[in-house]
Length: 317
Image 1: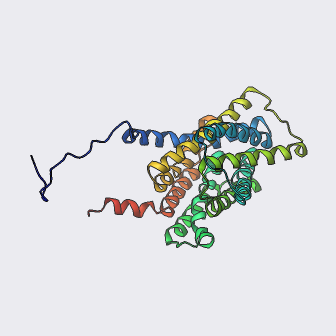
Image 2 (image 1 turned 90 degrees about the horizontal axis):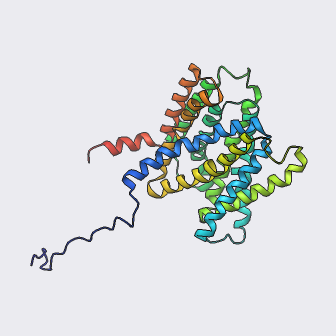
Image 3 (image 1 turned 135 degrees about the vertical axis):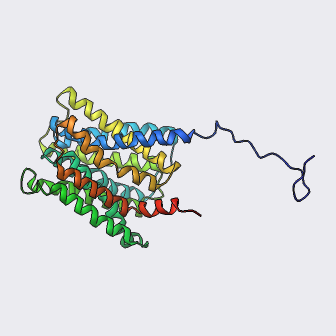
């Protein structure tokens, strides 16, 4: 019998049961490839939806359909329910992250802001969160987020330079307000709801957003239902694919990889939206837009610290 250095019997290492773990070698690249267009599709679908119905109607059906899908996950997973003030914090998060963000973004799309421009401006939110995190969560901040946000802002300005004061006018403020609402909601979620199970958090936020939207509908003078088949189809896409589907893919990738991996994928969204918007909704792709997108992507890459991580990962040990 073979023995180890201590004189004990040499046993073979345990064989890993391949059935207990997903085949991540091919599944993670597949999910990553799917995540970018699914997440990006929200801007294209939002542009189409706001052309077929009023913004409150778009929000109503997005929240209703997404809530229906998430409730199925809650029934299956049976996560813990919020307690005490956690309910209030989840409602505040919903007002910022769901109602506020999408109200401003969809209104901007309805007012003529291109989907590519909207996605580019919303892409600045993670860097803004990085800048504000030390003030809200008392964590240290490096120079990368500040430099990245500055570079990214230059990219946004280049994209908008030939449109400000022209066709867009003051409407460009709307996606900026949506971005600020998204950043505030992200920070609030991290500060007060970090311990709440994901399924519970999403379900409560969607329910609260739906209640607020339904309560406001009678005072807005808009229709409750989509008026044509295209409106129904795009509502289903926003609720099932873009909301529930994108959330599921994001959380799986966060679990199997890291926030850096997901952030790198999010960097691809503005360019994906800008390219897809050309054939789908007929938005022009100008030279300024291409240059600005490239500059903004560099800013996001630097601001999220991916450049330094790649260099360290590639350096010999």
